[in-house]
Image (tube, rainbow, N blue to C red; front, side, top):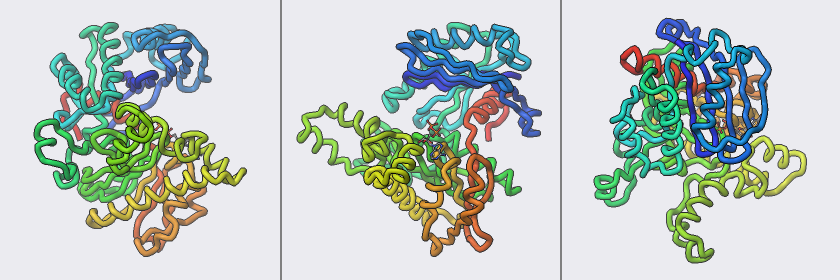
Length: 413
Ligand code: ADP
């Protein structure tokens, strides 16, 4: 079956078409047929469309909203010239899988969409006002086009973390705040952490119950997850994706008193401070240059830029502190897994993170580390107690597979 995987952001829409079914999953033979991205929805949009084995098409066009963006993709799918293997028209799309950021406490697994599930996702908007409304726009647009003729599934970033114990997910604030408003830590990037833990299990021939690892997703957004017996027992993002590690534009952990202080000193509203913490902080805020780690490394190395170097130091220091704390909560940790754009591609950042951690049993082989960018493998030395794995993430594949399992009403892993 061919699954259209949609990831709708506030002003962007990413998609993939993945051929998969229960047999292909079992033999790990599912494959991507096409992918694409529409950026800057609401103005002159940049559109990238790519059928596998064909060069990418890049163009600009005014795309007013998500419905128009999906119409654009549908037109491309319906055009035989697009050259998507086995897909001649929309009739060759058999299901849609949506990435949904926040599933609150309600959604502990991926699920087929129906009206009541959509209402429950709407109920989570309070918890994720920046993300869930955009995800829902994708669901509404697909429903307008397909009606009920095609099954749709929702796959939640939060779901993998539903196994966290209460001592890990509760904030130490009055308990009534949790009871009344569900203020707690939920965690995100669950699909990515789950995928790399699964790949690690396959590559090491392990049972799920024997997977005890730390997974580090370092992309534009960054989070770390402690995985015990194959399930999440702690993660660094909180009620929203703002908590935890330093990210491209997010501050990560911060003394909550800073919010009030900035409203007084700078005359900002609370909403403005929150926006600064989400959109103008992290690598961008410290470097004053960019949120892009590649460019920051270049500035640090080639121009000896002081603030670029500081941004890298603060980023790496925060990751190291979290690794230390998660090693202390896991029983028998066996490996650290690096994933996400930075984790997969930057041997430089990986090397800084692992430096001088011998006493924790972490020893990196720098030659192996350099050889791994973009590939899966272990760069620990033979005497290292912990494995140091690079595993490229593939959230879209997991969304497509969960969609297939939901359609087949199979139990979800
Ligand atoms: P997103 O979280 O938006 O999916 P990615 O996972 O693609 O983002 O990660 C984007 C980040 O990865 C950017 O900061 C980018 O600079 C960084 N990155 C990609 N390749 C490299 C590289 N070779 N060296 C350092 N950073 C890299």
